[in-house]
Amino acid sequence: MKKKILIFILLNILTFNSKAEIVYIDINFIVNSSDVGKNLNTYLETIKNQNLLKYKEIENDLVNKEKSLIAQQNILDKEQFQKKLKKLTAEVQKYRSDKKVSLEELNNIKINKTKEILLVLNPIITKYVDENSISIVIPKKNIIVGRKNLDITNQIIKLLNNNITKLEF
Image (tube, rainbow, N blue to C red):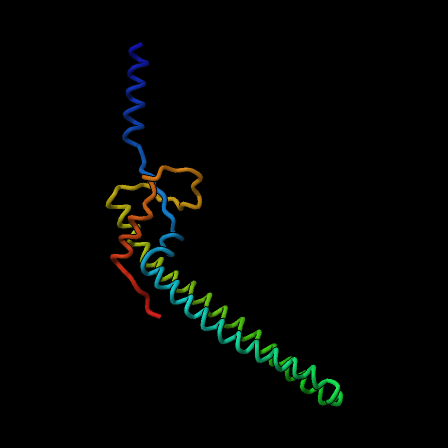
């Protein structure tokens, strides 16, 4: 009986001292909800809207040219019609490639600026972990169920907001 009690006490002491502090964090929420993330999202939305207006005008112009060419189809001889059709086709291809390039540029800006945010965020998380004696930080996307008090996302957002609020564009 004494051996069982002694083993029970020893196991409790060993597990109590080796208890690891595990928390989780939602990086996507931090990137999108922090002041710097909101600044980035506003900038990206502005560029996206500018591109949308620009390409909508070009698209309308191309549609009008197409309608005009179709209306002239019976009036023009075949050779002139083919020349104008090739010219219009080339304009449509240029429009598509320009639109694709601008979307890629927008995605590259988003990727690069998000990397900048993460470069600032990493030391903040590291410092927080050291100060609060945390053993492991797990991404929230890998958590099925967890207690709310283990979520350090809001504390990290506050620290990030105190550290940086805007990016240079």
